[in-house]
Image (cartoon, rainbow, N blue to C red; front, top):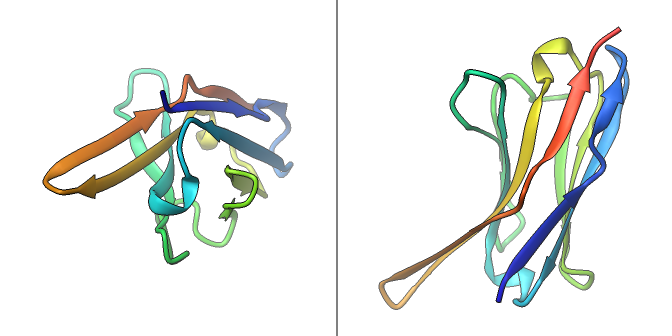
Length: 119
């Protein structure tokens, strides 16, 4: 059974930094596209950053230059380094694993970690 456990969220002042961690168990991280999504109160879940199995990355325009997604396949862990945080970054952040194989899709979510950016 694939499990994703996020950590690293919390309360931070504007301009501060946080590093989110997603620990994966039950499968091999390297075969998945991995992403971080977020959902603010009253808003739809949105993609923040994604990294593919060949380590290419893509970011939402709102976080480019501030957030960095990375992965350590040996540790089965995905990271999201968030710098220069803004109040509009406040949301629950979710880790996601996704892959397609032989016509089947495998998609998994963590439980989320709350990030609050406020003075």
